[in-house]
Length: 125
Image (tube, rainbow, N blue to C red):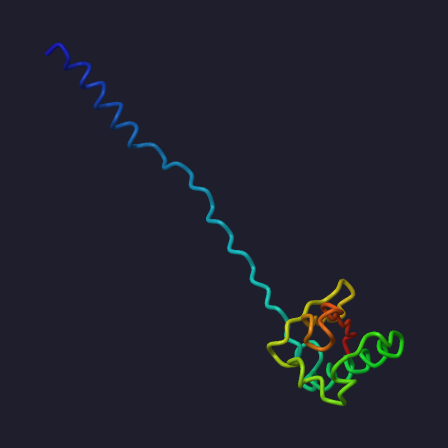
C-alpha cells in the first residue's frame, strides 16, 4: 500500500499525456512537377521531318564548302540524310537558351568517325 499513491500519480500522468493534442505532422512532400518535353512536331510543325532534313542537309553542304576535309555521307553519296540518321519522334534533341533546336549525331553516323559527334543548331520555323 505504500506504493499506491505513487502508482495513482503515474496513472494520472499517463492519462493526461494521452489527452494532449496530437503532435503536428509535417506537410506531405510536394510531388515534383513533371514538365513534358516538347516534341519535334510540336516545335516545328507537322512537316518537321522535311524541315529538319532540309536544314541539316543545307548546313552539311555549307560546312563541306568551308572545310573540304569534312565529308558528310548524305552529300558525298547523294543520299537522303534519313539513310544515315533517324529524323522522327525518336530523334534526341535539346534546345539552347535562345530556343533553337540542337540535334546531335554520334561519331560515324553522318560523317567520318574521326570528325567526332556532329551537332546542328536548327532555328525554329
